[in-house]
Length: 288
Image (cartoon, rainbow, N blue to C red):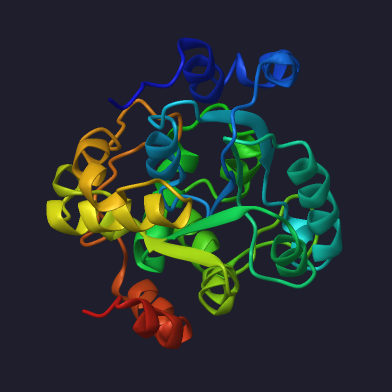
């Protein structure tokens, strides 16, 4: 029977006020608890691509738990990926068996080298870049816990200006208050498709009927993830786990639907994204 995430872990990862001060305590507790045999998993994703769907699945696995470790994407990582690689390596070393950590890291060397050399199972979640743009827009408009939110909204006070900044990027590369154009972001993450040992899943396939997708696709993707991390009888147990992964209580949740970008993204932005991300979109089946 799938187990629900502990109340403590749930509160830590979904509360903007508890997360930072509690994380050190959570890690300390995790270090002294028994660690049953099992895989170490890295749940990676492009920001706003459904991290919560993957972690909601992992949180159900008996004996499996969140390690309390997370490597966030920083603007400087595109110019200096070695910084992210060093942080990733440090955190992976501290992930115990039957535990997972989360990351938002692109497929850039030496980040890819660290994962390839580590004894971990990596699941990478990706999403239609048109939907990513709208999701990022809604997140900035509503997520008060984001540290740079006020500065970004001050720079781009209108909806039009904010969406344009998300699509085309802003600031100097590497500057703390900057973001790359969406094609740089998306294409860098699509590079995980070419990394052996990394399982890439689409948000649209994993979200299920509650998010506008298909239940059979959701079950299939859940089975792929379970099989990738070594769960026995993955195909048989997948339907049970799939029922519980759509989580409206996730801290970064907004609408969680696959076609939410339609009607919200200006035609010029749609055209730009499709032109600049076209090759990777085609590989992932994002057409029409």
